[in-house]
Length: 595
Image (cartoon, rainbow, N blue to C red; front, side, top):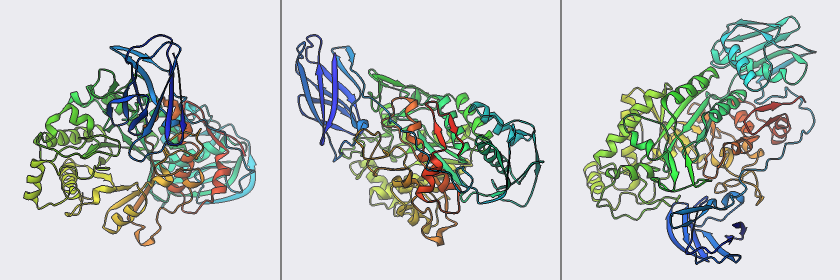
């Protein structure tokens, strides 16, 4: 069975050459967004980007060509937009077709000469060299934070422990701040927190990989308390070991918040006890499951995370001075929930709203009692699994006119004095946030949670600005704390370039390494106290193997790190130079080379 596909203008041109006669086959696949056949077949089923096209009888040895377009105005940009998990269905028999060559074909970044400061990312606030260097075998200390650094070094194949003595002392420094005095007699670390001691160790570990240790004084402190990286494990199930490796990489770059996105339209992957059907029926996608192979690189794909697994990941993160914020999704991005629990939808709803992903009926109806039973139970139990103070509630990409065709929702709106979809969304997310506060957590949500005539989510929520910086600035002016995660700069699922042989999404543009540093998280200085952080984001619609993660994140995660930590600007050329010292392999192991 021969199969190939190429991008030609706005179309995908797929060719199938069968090695035998096949009666009325169905061509099944997924992709970046919803599709529609132009010639060569007839659409018989579509669930978002998952598509089934009926083909005419295939004759052995003959080439059959199918021309496929993306609906909704999307244009294929690169290989990631070609069919994922392609296969034929003949009756009940499935015939896999050769997969698209997946993943970014990363090229090592060439070094552009020596860097004038310390060759590390992020750059320290102050570096005062004494002008001498010394060759040492490592550092001697029994401090708990430095022991965590040593364990990280071992996992990364680096050396940290040795004979050079380290002395710890406390001082009047902020959280995660530190100073290091490096002399031939020993190292003195001054810090007032576990994080400060840990990051001092990370700096020493990085310098140790680069040859003789430079002597002098380093004074350092982060610009933002929130230095984050998000990972979507709903669209693609990442093995726990991959998540642990990502946490290690984050720690080496002084990032301290992991936004774990395990719930979305396509799956709910945490094994909660209150509603086990939710994860049991959504963890796997493909033939015979609740949802077909949406965003799947194989005929069947998926998995779930037990509470014990989550607890192990949380403990691993905490040793690295990283807190984990879990995210549940409400009220939209809930296709799996509405399929498993149809009582969350009004049976009288005749609305035709459709999400940007091509899903109909993917929003929970706040007028249905089952919606609140589920959301309150999920929020409470997930909050109990994760000790971090914050729970993210989602609240993004609600389809236009959602609930407008629901008599029950209309009645609720009349009772509450609401007029629009955004009004009802604001009322809904505020009610859920109030429940979260009663459970002892602080709510968080995407930027859309500020919408609505009643003022949005409220309840001291933190909002994440993703479509750009504008909504975040507006939210900050309205009194919300804001984390900046603008897609044009730190959405690391965007393709690095416009090369058609590259890999990734493109709706927000192409995000180069230089783009990750070429922006100001706080363009309005009156909002300094309200903009609390910077976060990178990675969505997994086109990820078919865990190993595809690393060449997408790196080297651009270096820019996220620099923006989140440094108070002083770094030029794009400086970042490119520093990026030449950092490489990752297909397991996420980082290699730091000498200047």
